[in-house]
Amino acid sequence: MSNAAPGFAQHPRHVVSIGPPVHSLRLWRGGVLLARTEHARLVEETGYPPRHYLPADAFEHSRLTASDTTTYCPFKGRARYWHVDVGDERLEDAIWAYTEPYDECAALADCRAFYAEAFEVESP
Image 1 (spheres, rainbow, N blue to C red):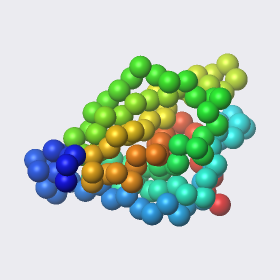
Image 2 (image 1 turned 30 degrees about the vertical axis):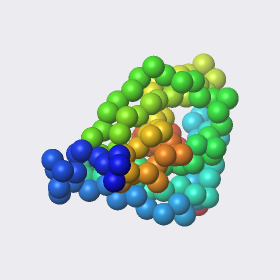
Image 3 (image 1 turned 90 degrees about the horizontal axis):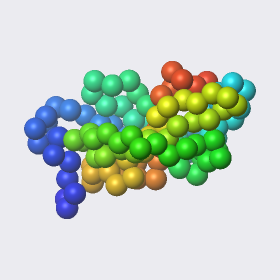
Image 4 (image 1 turned 60 degrees about the horizontal axis):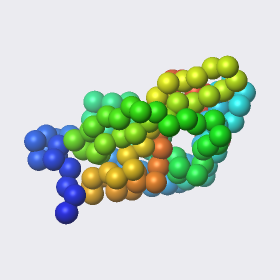
């Protein structure tokens, strides 16, 4: 792999399991629909709660504002964040993406994740 994640060599028992894009999901906040897709992926990672990753085009982009925040994961890569604006409320850094993930997590390249506890998540 040309862009291998360094974390797996250092922590061989760490698992990042990326499910297929087959889940139907809607994301709401205060009665406002923020995202809708039939192609959500469930990602399960050692030490973290399961997270859904949605295609970037599933989100209502008019509600998102790019943040200056970035973080680094030795398994997935560098993440960038977005704030979510609903009415007068702003959820800081509530959505993130690994736009250039390591090879092992390449399936996440065009996806965005969110803190489920900050939203109403509907999975019909």
